[in-house]
Amino acid sequence: MNCCDTKTLSMGISGAPGFDFSNTQRNMAMAKMGARVPAARSTGTTIVAATFQGGVVMGADSRATQGNIVADKNCMKVHKLTESIYCCGAGTAADLDQVAKMLSANLRLQELNSGKKARVITAVRMAKQHLYRYMGYVGAYLLVGGVDPTGSFLYELSAHGVSMAKPFASEGSGSYAAISVLERDFKFAQTEEDAKALVQRALHAGMHGDNASGNSLNLVIIKPQTTVFEGPIVPNFCVQPDKIELEYKFKPGATKVLKQKTIKYDVIESMDITQ
Image (cartoon, rainbow, N blue to C red):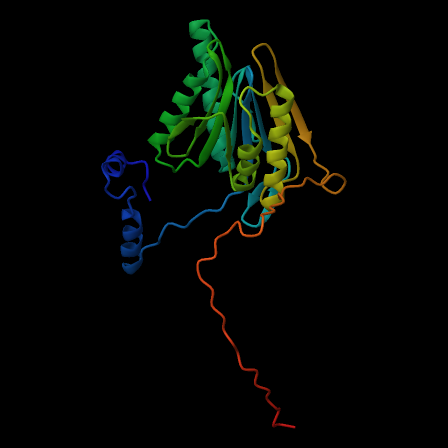
């Protein structure tokens, strides 16, 4: 499905169908001709980031998987781009490492040439142009955040080159559980302590709900004057298990009954004739 096509988006705005399923038809035609159909890949990661008053907190788990095998328990998914700009990556580990190294080198060259600190939007621009050039074949889903002279920022990037500025974000297979914690507890202009605790709770939720995420977590707190890296932090779920599920208590009659139907069943006893 190509949801990033300009033509498709314009059709969606005008009221026509907003998605393009031509790749599905292509795959069916390829299968009929005996060609190999592109296989879906399953990856595992939980990366989380949240903004606070004047800064950004970013974090990730440390488990790298190869199919259903834990290949690495100490995979670093929090990458330093500059002194005040970091990125977290989900997707293919090799692609993430190379993209992070490329961005770090190019941003450093720009800082040396200009004599000024690199801006977060510059890192986002470099990353999205590189990813869009390869149309998703570079499997890097990024959270880019940091602080520059214009303020603190957080961006979410897909492997196809789409970028969005967000106050909080999560990516990876464990993001379904993590984003629920972020949406429930995030507050604008929150303190650094609240943002750090929120990111840790979201990572714990992702590690609870996703078998491909786990082992330990790494955090980075980016502020205008300092950047602090913390990790690896090994959560002890056995001693202090996090309560992820909420209690839902609804008053009787809160849901309107539209229709009732009673079905009667006849109970038939059968005997074993083989005895």
